[in-house]
Length: 258
Image (cartoon, rainbow, N blue to C red; front, side, top):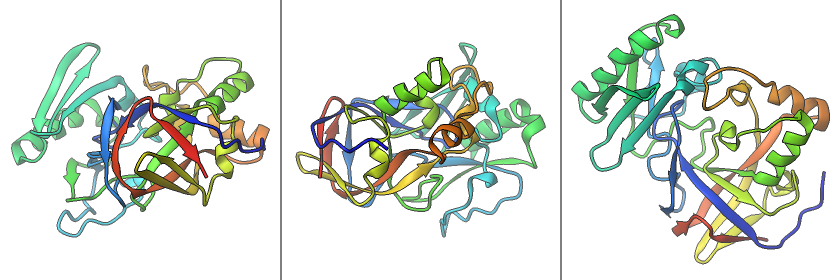
């Protein structure tokens, strides 16, 4: 493992995923609140079959309960956009609008569910259901947090693979540049700060087969967790961090590690 370097770290991209398993949205600026995720990150999910999520008492459920890339790579072919104010989700497939619905209405959710019945027929375990809970995030971990990856680690992975690797494979919220490759894995217990914002790293991210899916083409074309284990002895790539103090965070911001 390379030694940490505490020099400036550039925030190159801010990304959220309004619906678990569907496509990303890039933000130029975001307001972070202590103990929260990015606004609307994984705010919605689509249950696959028997309903287990209770919107009145939202609790963490393992991702296998939902449509998600680890098992359902065809979802990556869908390009989505989400409007914060109206909660409208729009879905395109091969450049054509195929579904749209206001997710905080039963009619809007049904429009998305009906599309998924047709598009994901072979992958469904029962009727799909769009679900949401106030202040709940359908993250892969139970804690409300941000997911961070390091572009230098992506570049090192590209060298191991001998081919380009799209950073969006890792579905992170903050994409940073500057630190030595894989040094971020040693940041557990450390803080990242910019102006009045403080993030505390608490966990390394163990990768699942979702990273094997090309986020543009929706096909499995790599074996990233296995490659990591072969070369590094583990399947970790990226870290999770809690927001300890919030404020406005902008793309291009400089972060400092301590």
